[in-house]
Image 1: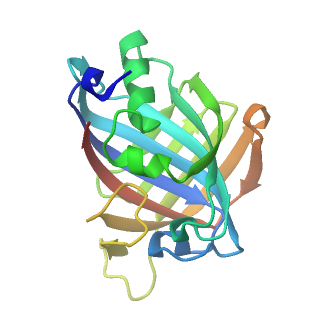
Image 2: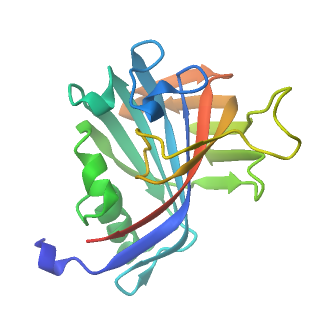
Image 3: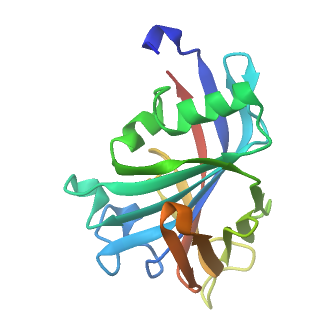
Length: 215
């Protein structure tokens, strides 16, 4: 497919990750991961979206990722497996794959340059939740993925306020973002078919809204 065949598109919504790093994950600050490697879940919910005339509103995507070293320093690449919402119809499935693999341009085309090993594309039922006040966020693929984080807080955090980072140099969804920090209360992956399995909690999580367009 040539660039001329890609329609204009725009998607916006919620993204979060839950990873193996300590709080806060150094990767968002363009530093090396806590233990030299980072393994985690990246979850996306499209609140509003059009790919040409195809609506993507309400659909979800999820990626399982692993890399060693500083992903932003240009000396390492990630291994990634994508899961897309099985409720998507044929046109929507095509659009999701085009956008999230970077073939439709936009921010994810830049993100795709950080991927070294493609562990496949799968379709599954994905449930995504994020509280309006960002008190928690979660994603589930029954039998495969269950991740949930609660907003980070502490004795010096004002009541009802969130711990946030502005303009992070390693934002996973693009520049000019606001990241809200959380702590994983559940982080379990059982997806041997794409070579990802773990069970832990208490590690880093962050929520960032995304707003992309292309091509």
